[in-house]
Image (tube, rainbow, N blue to C red; front, side):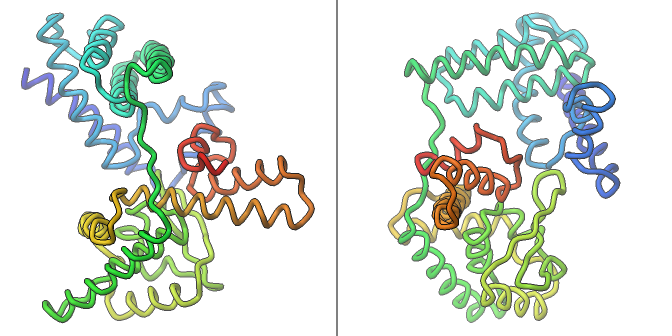
Length: 329
């Protein structure tokens, strides 16, 4: 058993290390385009890769449970032996346990990656699609819970940022060490960035002319966004005096949760802040386009595409529009 668990960990780590070796020489988008050109498959060169440490840890946890089931119930001794039978047994068990749709989707993605890493990408992808449809049907029937997409109110968000600023000041008085959690929160609100992009991946070099900031997202993709001049100046002053990155990501996320609760809110994750920012940007962009003469449907379509692109995704991702912008769009 220990060897199977170690094998799945080693395979995943290898996929992560392969991307680390490629970073700086190509991008996720370029690999997709190459897959289309050479194999008519945008995922062809992405399947053997894992792009973030967070994904690596998530897949590792799921697949260790999966191989335990595969060995216990089907006598599997090598990863190459896994097939549809094991995939279906693991997914069906999760459904029977009443797991939430978000967890089940994470399971099928993890299993599809495992299949890809043992040369069974087509089979894994087919099973993943099959269970994706099944999960959606179960959510619509009310048999399992769908994803919660709560968004914090603007009042709670602003109060939480103010609380963080006060706590940062107290922290410096108490310890003598500076902290900029409130700047990270403001940056997330202004840009819809991921928490890691506004903390551990943001250094002085990210600040550009014209009050722009270069954010590093998933897979090393970058995006330039203009932010308010006072925020740009505050971040520059802080990083000039305190070289390094803007904040520790885990510390920031913990502090944000406490600040939201102190402000009377309930949506404590930083992803809720990202969703609030995306919705506010969409509303602003929609009305701006209406004012320039666009029809309501055209303004809605273009504003939605701009908002999703700002989040660091493709403009045509209708699934993300539903996740981040509903009910706004």
